[in-house]
Image (tube, rainbow, N blue to C red; front, side):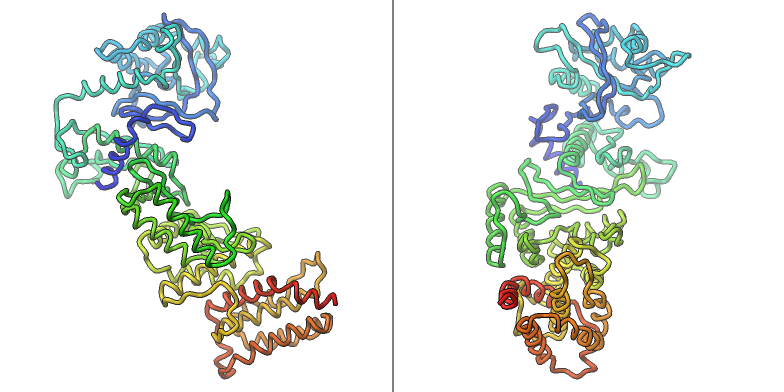
Amino acid sequence: MGLLQKAVETYDAMAHRAGNIYADEREPLAPVSHIMARAQIEVTLDQDGNFVSARAVDKAEPKIIIPVTEESAGRTNAPCAHPLCDQLGYVSPRDPKKHKLYVTALSDWANSDFTHPMLGPILHYVQGGTILSDLSGAEMIRLTPEGAPPEEKAMVCWIVNGLGEKLSGPCWKDQGLMNAYISYISARRQGKSALCMISGVSESPAGQHPKGIVPTNGNAKLISANDSSGFTYRGRFDDSAQAATVSYTASQKAHCALRWLVANQGVPFGGRTFLCWNPQGRKVPSVTKSMARPGGDRQRAANPTQYRQQLKDALYGWKTELPDQAGVVIAAFDAATTGRLAVTYYNELPASDFLERLKAWDESCCWENGPLGIQSPTLFQLANWAFGTPRNGKADIDDRILSQQMQRLVDCRVNKVPFPLDIERALVERASNLMIYEGENRKRLLFTACAAIRKYHFDHFKEEWDMALDKDCTNRSYLFGRLLAIAEAVEQSTYSGDSTREANAMRTQKAFSLHPLTVWRVLEEKLEPYYKQLPPRLGRYYRDMTQEIVGKLSVSDGELNQKLDDIYLLGYYHQRAYRKEKSNQPETEEGN
């Protein structure tokens, strides 16, 4: 119930926004007893219920807020009418059964103590039964020879003019109309009550619960226990109410809030939707991205000191947005079937803990990313490069794998779980075969793999690898990684500027990682012709550096030829970056 309680808390805190349209939102917060729907036909009437005009609603226009009953909000195949805006099959008299349901629902509201001036003209027009001919005359639709519309599921919405400045206009923007319907439904639900396990008070229980929290899983429900014949709850309870009782009001608030949050803040990954929010409506940082991203007035972090300062500044900024006593809720939703929506992940944290954990992750899972400076890769980058299938030079990951791995990484980041070994190994394996990737994708993969290696060693071994070349490091794998980068540099130094050739070091990278000494001896022989093409001083520069590194490999040949561990990629990256930093010096000597 924690999720629903936080959703109700969110709705109560943001109730002033219910029914209002804001420029910074993709969808507004729907009031209780209302849902968001996409209209296709807009009909304008005058104050007497006469047809004025009609227009087709463009697909790019936002959804509208429409009133619904508990039954109509969850309708599937069985006919059940909305009380105001509904499909053409209900509004027109083409289907007598559906039309009667619609007219009855609208009449009951219009004739109640909670009526509204808009309802009379709409009811009068609908009872006239001329909507199909009017739409046809306005060239909105083309009827079949039998008089049927081309699309009976087209949603019809209403504009009523001539009621005065305050009452005229679109029905989906009228706050008075929305409040009248809420009062109407509340009055109709007086009577039976039960203890609500969300609010803790005795209220009218919900018979059905809304669907459509996640738009991509439109028919999936978060709460459903109406399948007594299919043994959904039988075997544990005699009646669904014995499992849990949720009041109508609490259910409506929770579902409206979750639908609003998903529409405006939800992040989908592989069919699973991730949500991170503060119930009081305060802005929170993304749980899948770094706290300190380049852009705006943020400077490039050229060294670890600058990067740590960026994180401190970001943390301070977020703490002004999120006080320590504020809460943060993280949830993930997925639908195993078309009718059931599952909460696959849920967590609540104080804002102070949440922000500190994001910062701690970014501080340990980071690496130098070329011209962008030191960064922390997004969780999507980690999952995509680790498990994606290389296609056209970049990774393409299966949706099911992506959703599962993203949730694992979210859990690692939020709950301070050590970085998963399988993800780190997968990234090392991919980065050990850079040949299959192209240009920028090769750089992105190497950056992501190095950040993951650094994070893994920090979490499991408390090692903190620097992001600059360590000339004193005697780690065998690190040294061989440096040699691989030097072999690549020697060969590439002889290429013309527009050459697309791959160096032998790159082509043999995978074999080098498995049998480094054997492959290095082959590479050394192949490098001799390239050394002869280099200017003498540049050739000596690379030879001296190679001899210095080889001199630190003090173990026997048998041990030297064993498979390299993940650290070799750090040595490879460091040596390549060092070469670029110092490139002016060799080039100057070459020119002299």
